[in-house]
Image (cartoon, rainbow, N blue to C red):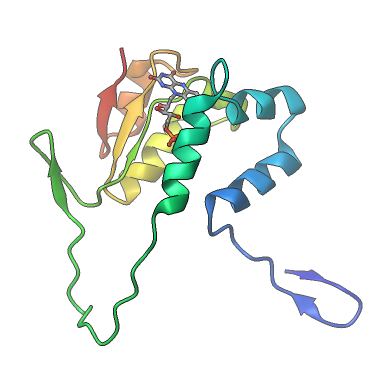
Length: 140
Ligand SMILES: Cc1cc2nc3c(=O)[nH]c(=O)nc-3n(C[C@H](O)[C@H](O)[C@H](O)COP(=O)(O)O)c2cc1C
């Protein structure tokens, strides 16, 4: 909780990708931020991906019974609780001391898939040992 002169102001948790990026800008050194923010060469794929995600809309549906929900699905023969996978990204310790282990545990805690990059800052053995309950893939 932070305060201005007269009112308590609640710190709002990040709720979209832009919020996470804004928060990262406040804490990461410039060189690290530069690495995470950029794509390769002319950055065409990065732009295409952003434009594609911007086209997606969530369709609100009213008066639907949501007391029983099931987000599980099957991916390459594995039953996953949510259709979320963290794609391989290199050198995650540059952003946080827990690096790949923190990320693998986080996605595991919601039942998604973690994909370890071959350019990780933590060994494959350590990630395997410290994120036991996570479905783990490896990018070679
Ligand atoms: C900082 C960063 C590091 C990445 N490192 C890897 C990597 O080591 N191996 C890999 O196969 N892909 C890597 N990627 C590509 C991502 O796995 C993913 O395919 C790409 O970011 C597109 O997905 P997005 O639109 O959700 O960002 C990296 C991407 C970023 C932004």
